[in-house]
Length: 401
Ligand SMILES: *Cc1c(COP(=O)(O)O)cnc(C)c1O
Image 1 (cartoon, rainbow, N blue to C red):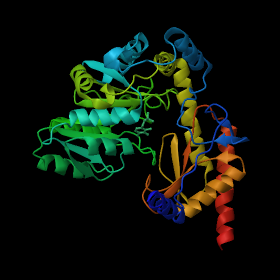
Image 2: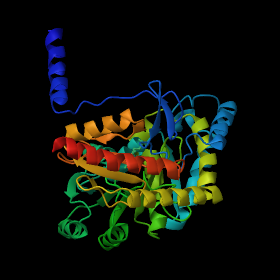
Image 3: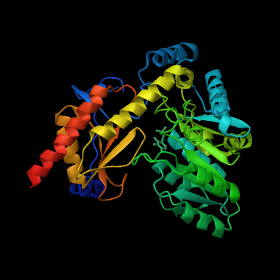
């Protein structure tokens, strides 16, 4: 009997392998930085979301150590029992103040992960079966799962299609309307039309939940993210920022009107029924936030933007398509799963680590390299990547001919 159970699993794994969809992990023996030791080899990595290079920043690492000295290793309990530390409280105050220009009566709540923050916000706002969640087609998996877990109905609108969303909102009789979107789409690098979405939400009395996982720390003159980039301010906004990407540590936060945050504390199960993250992480994040908001953060963002422009100028692709992204996420669509893997393997052989992204993360037939640039990269390193990609496309084209 047990053998039948295992045979069933093995059939599923074989089916993945037959479609070149098996995923493998590489084991890193060094910090997340452009030069990494991976499975015993030094690689130049273009795959981390550590956009500002803060994951191994000496000040952030020192703050993590100091946080462990002050608060110990673990929090010991959930936030509502006894796990809520002074470090968590200070971080929430700082995050609320940071996003305050874009919200009304802002308050912030720290979560263990962005995945959990997204489950929390959609299940808490969408707890009523008569509510509807209007979800953008290319939303992150955690938003899709949050919408599934909520009691509310779910209506998916096409990517970037404000008119389609408007028609859906106008036709809706839902008691509560919740529009939810990534700000920067994680596999395409493009931006959601947030000003138009917010205008629609205000007109239809809907919440606009913005998942700014790839914008927080990176977008906006002060790194406040997508709301600063588009200069938005509204009581309808519910902002989710994650803290394991540009902030370099881990966790996430929701910032919104104080009443929304109070509802999360009272009702959001992914907030209530889990052990609070180690306080040392919150202590380290105070240092990250200080860097993001200060002159060093501005300098790092300027360098990152220059690298994004440089890659666009130096790539000369004919068959593969670099998507028109102006963010640190620079996808190059190859097409088939096998070819995308092959290109990634060729790059790896040259010491370049660029991940191949395949379905179900992206649509079938659009497998791609997902290049991510970061402020810790140098111009020379980006030039090396562009040269390698240009040559590789040429070489594979010739081999195919
Ligand atoms: C990474 C990511 C998340 C999840 O955040 P974690 O803190 O890694 O759990 C949510 N939304 C988007 C768009 C992301 O890219």
